[in-house]
Length: 478
Ligand code: GLN
Image 1 (cartoon, rainbow, N blue to C red):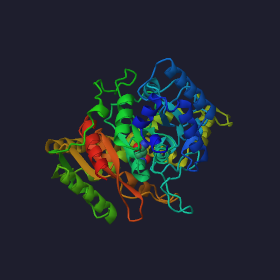
Image 2: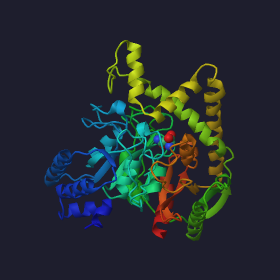
Image 3: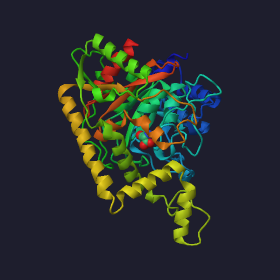
Image 4: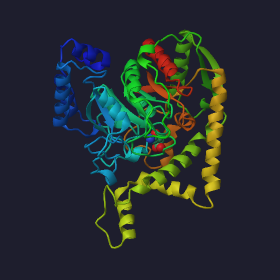
């Protein structure tokens, strides 16, 4: 039966033919989640899942069958879910129960999704390892050595790990600078970050609003296409939501890439990339060429400034977004209340973890009078140059091929001594984020240690279909 549980289409077929009920599906996944030791979920409520499964079975018996009826989905604990605790992986929100549902999760629920739990993440989505979560680290299910547990990547590590371990068929994630693509690469699953504005940000706890974007994890490209077309769509509650018609990605999915021009950015070929990652990247290029694509060398000259630019802009926006957590309206409040100022101060000091505090400090600094122009404004200007590089490149090619991450999954505890080491994980993902472009990570090849590696394909604005099609071609090849 395991095979039937590995794709949305197969499971929907079984349901339609009355060979299985949603309740039976839910029991299968509940059992797997309970036995799992990878700590992919922060919140998991068996009774809730069974209740919802029963409701979906009742609906079906009355003749209503939705597009993803009864499909088990994990939800990153950054999406507000009505009456279900939503923590952002932080102590400051450990008891926060939203009174509303995010647009993206509503869209999934409206089509019959069965939510199996809220997945773990780096605190407020700041990180590349899911080790900064107040609720502990998620373990990468691809870890080979019990004594050397590997990170799942981050910040959406819980979602990536849950899909990789088949604890659900798909999961939502968010990606500000790589948080879907990098964990997907570490856990050997597909992760797509759509164009900025494709999915509504309404009800997603904000990190850096000009970069945050919701997306999908899945085990195959078709499932990613199905989930994305359901999640996406215009929402007047998000002023940056794009008012476009969402294509039927799954229906239009094709693996024909004949004549597609695929760009290889020469600046990504630095000597700092490990040899196995470089070889794997070149292998993927060879496959695509053999399958009919035309390979073109392109230049993204400002790429080298992407990481420092991101690490000014994202903290700046975070420092502003996180100002609301002060113990007054909701969330954790310290018992120390000698004065209002003392209450604010101690609440934030006790409620936030070290990485979040670091970002708030950096962000406040780069926005402060005297430094604003030297840092924030300059970073904004470089962001435009980076976007222009991509515009130029897309005059020559239809998609860009890069490694997803400069490393394989690393052991939990590594890279914790120096934040820059952790930030370097984002070197290949951040440029597309700054330009608001869609990017997908597709599992391709293994590292010298036998761990999964990912290949990133970046597309033009709102051209998710092309990167899904190229991924589909690669998926069929491997
Ligand atoms: N790792 C990056 C950061 O820490 C990206 C995080 C994200 O995309 N949410 O900022």
